[in-house]
Length: 510
Image 1: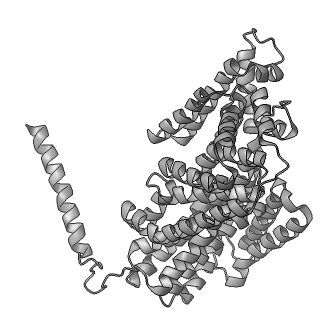
Image 2: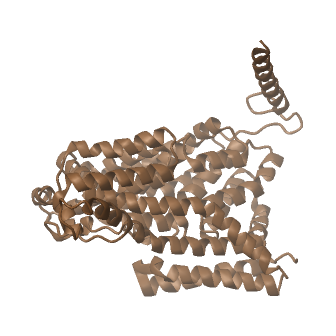
Image 3: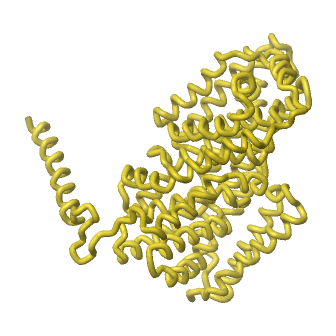
C-alpha cells in the first residue's frame, strides 16, 4: 500500500465541493433531498478508485473503513428515528400545541428570540444533548415563532445557538466527554477552561438576539389572537400535558439511554393522544372512537408514518401534519452516504496526509490553535460527522501539543470550539442534516444566524493570539503551570487509588 500525495488526497474533496456548489444553484434549499447524497457517493467512489488503482489499497480495507464509520453513526441513526417518533407524538398529543399556545400567550414578541435562546441553552445544559433539545423544545419554539411571523433563519439560529452552547459546557454531553478524553484533559478542567471562550461568545450572541428582537419585527399581518383560537379549536390545551416533557427530562437526568428515553416518551405521548385529543384521533383512525382497534392503530400510525390533520388555518395545518419515523428516512440516507465517504477518506490515508501537511503551519500558539480549528472544520466538511471531526484531529495533534509544552485542555477546547459547533453549519454533515430535518429549515438558511457557532472559533483564536489564559508546562521538568509535576500528580493519584483498594480489601477480610 502506497502513501497518497497531497493533491491526490484532495481530489475526492474537490469532487464533493464541486457537485455541492452546482447543486446549491440548481436545487437551492432541496440540496439534502438527493443532490448531497449523490455528491457524497460520487466523491466516495472517486476516492475508492484512486485508492485501489493508484495506491493499491485493497477494497476490503476500504470496506472495513466504511463499516467502522457506520458503527460510529449507528447510535445516531436510531436516535434520529426516535426523534421523528417523538416529534410526531408530541404534536398529536397536544404537547407541542400547548407549548406554542402558552408561549404565544406569555412571551412578548420583542423578547421571543432571546427567550428561546436562553431556554434552549438551559435545557441543553441540563440534559447534555443539543439533538434532544432541538428535537423536542426546539420544534415547539420554532412552531410558535412561525405563528408570530419570525423568519425561519432567526428562529433556528437562536434555537441552535442556545442548544450548542448548553451541549458544549455540559458535563453530561457526549462531545464534551469525547474531546476531553481524546486530549487527555480532566473533564471538569476542560469544562471550566471552555468558559473562557464561551462566555464572551454567549454574551455577544445574547446581545445580537436581544437587539434583533426589538428591531426585526415579526409579521404584523398575523393576528396572534386568532392563532391562539385556532390552536385551542383544534387541540385540547392543558398544562397537564406538559408533564410529558418533564417525564422526558426526568429520564435524561436519570441517565436513561437517549434511545430508550425518546422511545418511551414517544409511546407515552401517542397513547395519551388517544384519550386527550378525540377530535384529532377521529381524523387519523378509520375505526370508531370506541373501537379497541383505534387505540392500537393511532399510536402506531402517529409514531411510524405520515399523518394529515385539517386544522383551523393553513399554518396550523402544516404544524399538525407529521411524518413520524418515516420523515427521518431521507436524513438516514444521507448519513449512510456520509459514513461511506468518511470511511474511505480515512482508510485510504487521505485525511492523515492532509492534516500532516497542516502541521507545518503550527509555529506558535495562535497558528497551532488556528490550524487545529481549521483542521476540525475541514474534517467536518470532508468526514461529515462531528465525532470524526473531534477524534481524527485530536488523535493526530495530541502528541504535537505535548511536544510544544501545551496542556491537554488547550487541545480539548480547540476541538470543541470548532468541531462541535461548526458541524451543524455543513449541509451534508450528520448534524446539519439532522437539525435541518427536525426544524424544517435548510442548513444554508439558518447557518448565517447561528451566531454562537460562528463566533466560538473566532474567540478561541483571539484568546490564543493575545495569550490569554494559555497554560504551558516546563518540558524538561515536566511541571504544569500551577507547579505540580505530572509525575508527582500521577504518583499521588496512584497512591490514592492503591489506598482505596487496600481499604476495600481490609474491609472484605474483616
